[in-house]
Image 1: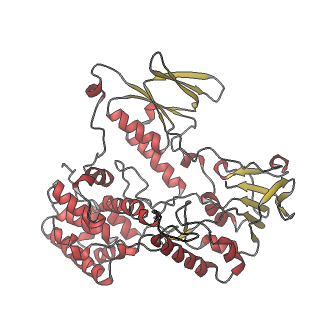
Image 2 (image 1 turned 45 degrees about the vertical axis):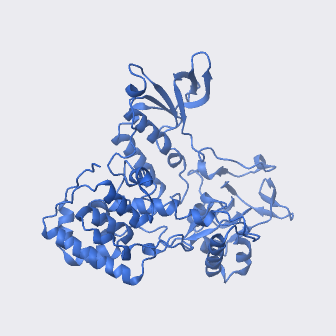
Length: 497
């Protein structure tokens, strides 16, 4: 297995020669990622010894800090990390030879537990080593010598960009049709206040285009959009994209075996493309859904969906209604609560809240330095986040057919539910009226769970905020009417549906 040999930057060299700064950086590091990174860099496999392996036990926040390593294991791990870095410095800072498959699997098992060699291609792909792991193992000439294969990709968001990149690597002629004037998909279209990831940032990136210096643990929308713009430029993908081409139909011509794709330009003109195959990369969050509520068109004030945010409407001093308590509402409400005169939030189904204290936090400078300059560290952090976000969550959501409970679906699911309810009690125990409305009556994991660092409960507690759980019957000119007959006044309506 060939891995690109890293070089030592002047910044890393300076850090390695400053014991105090190095100790601070190691103290704040994510050990379940740092230790395998250092083992790969130095060849010192004692860094991933069994006694240091994180148990990755799951809690309400799904993964314990430092992977659940005991205080003693953390202290031991940091001591070994410091010793390995000092020894590596004294030895001239020469990276160890590339790991063979057996060594790489041993490193991965430090994070994943007892996986087999069968998992190695998937895990190496997610680790991004070798650097272009996951590239197609075929070319057009392998499949059809002397023939050109043409593919139309619909959309230049996250999926469309990776499809274009991988197909181009294989020698396929690619045309990407994008309805917007820029790449980025949902991150281009969603500019509502507070828009940001609820997936750990390193995991939400391409394995072949990893970024070591994400500014936040969960980055804001603008940072994600900039990342996709950078990917498009770095891999020369823009030359394949036709912007402002909105696909209206794609039909297979049975006689020719080719697809006929029709797109519309902003001026109304049509353009027709033919292709051997079509890849739909349109996403699932790109078209806003406005609920079918009677009287919606009768509202006298401005109204819009979060996915089509209007920056031209001033919210300061106005009575605002937000309909919905899903992901976008969860971010919008705390972001506008200080600006509005009154805020009414209409909730049909409460979300489960996952405690995430660092949700809005920047990554500290010493950690950014380590992530940016220490070879392999950011890759192993991404790998750790990938594994715990997928396999780490799954056991809590598996249905046990023998389990009998009105809400949960297994013992683990019930343990998670109880812990999340306790979190809600800690946040809203002083407001029993709100607490009664925000505890979900469905199993955790049945719907998307929200990241909570306290801002949502704090917003609901504000004196000028009201949470309404009565079903909506209609929209009227000056507000929203619920089934109890109450008209909740509003000058602006935001649909977060």
